[in-house]
Image (cartoon, rainbow, N blue to C red; front, side, top):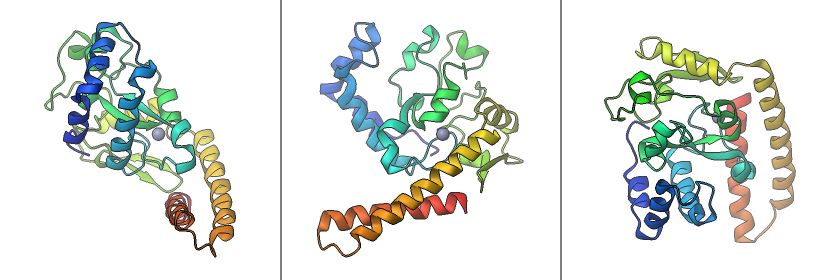
Length: 225
Ligand SMILES: [Zn+2]
């Protein structure tokens, strides 16, 4: 992901969403207001696809079963900070992250001094504590090895920022790695169970679900084995 998505940009300009977006920017409604739900659901679908069903920070698969509880529309620059409020609906600031990364990141300020002082983000901005998902392409800055274990990519030009991100998000934290692995293994066993029940079905929707589960299982195996 090296460019902002035109699809996401168009979505945020849709008439039926715009009036609530304006209300939210004015402070009349909150980000969590139900009126913004249709916009958020549509945005999730777009981001999921663009991010290949993975979290933008830890690059891990967001499993189908946990989608709604395990993925969050994430504001790279934290919208609760007054100096970043203007980026609440900016496509350059919106990504999809897993719940763990969002929780660990919390309200950490990822902007540097210029942005904190009210400066504007542009594609040329270099004023961030971490690599930026759209400006830098995180996968070219941090490599996820099996485990997963994270390492900085030498020569990316973002070594310091990558190190900050690995540390701030505790990506190499043993507890984090072990609980993830345990979850994926049990999820994989569960998929095998469901699929073996489905395998002889002639029903089309069951076959489609089986196909999706098998794809998920392949992605899990790629991550942990
Ligand atoms: Zn994550």
